[in-house]
Image (cartoon, rainbow, N blue to C red; front, side):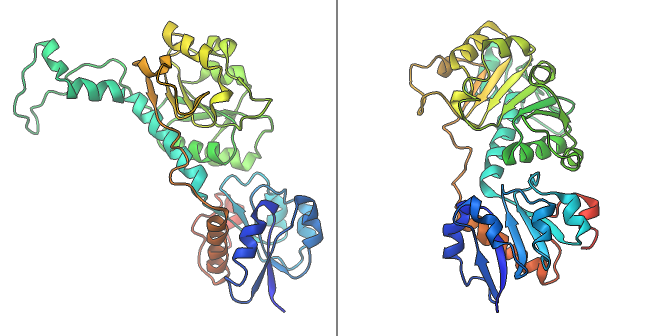
Length: 341
């Protein structure tokens, strides 16, 4: 009888069917709906892949022969990691293309704003040095026109604070990258993350207004729902400091666009990096298109896109590598969980 790999989230059922037989000796099973998940828990399951499905102690007790659990995404807050550890189950995470692409764009916008990239480019391309009475000279190792436009908006992100509204997979990947660059990271989320995940980055959990008031950069990474419709409006812009820069890589409707435009015009915030808008494509008569303190991109955060089949295939490949004795490519950064590798 084939051993089974349980793919816990029903949204991956078509990918499960498509990849059946991909890994010799293993049967892939997936619930038709999330409500059917518990009916698939059995002693035949040796591998578990979960993206959002809650994997708690009661679930793991129904999988007595489980050898390896994989989180599809590095934000493994849906796993009870203490229960995984206590049952001696190997645990690792699997990188997801989509969220990583969006996090990369958020970092790109942060760095671009920190270097006032559009103004910097235009000043070079248009020869604005002439307005400062300068003439081009041959540059050498120790002889150059360093910072010749004296742009006062250029700054380092090291030591700045990034506040993230929403901390799902995209927000978590962004937090990891920002921390590596020396930024402090705080976040607001309806449900606080487990302590082990906060410690990896590290992250500081804050109320929304406190986070907005204390952040140099504010990145929006929440889904667009009735609860998040225009959650950042005039009142929230008043809370932000006037040097704050807003980054929106989720959905345009999360922001009151008119309030944002007013905040940018009135100097309530310093700038914005925007990949999403109320109307897409951005209408040509939008005031956003004329502002010098805004960088706009055409909803490119998802990169070239991804597929559930591709993500599940990558997870199965990771399962095969680890079961075969290799170290995880993306280990969960929780020492007590990976000490066996």
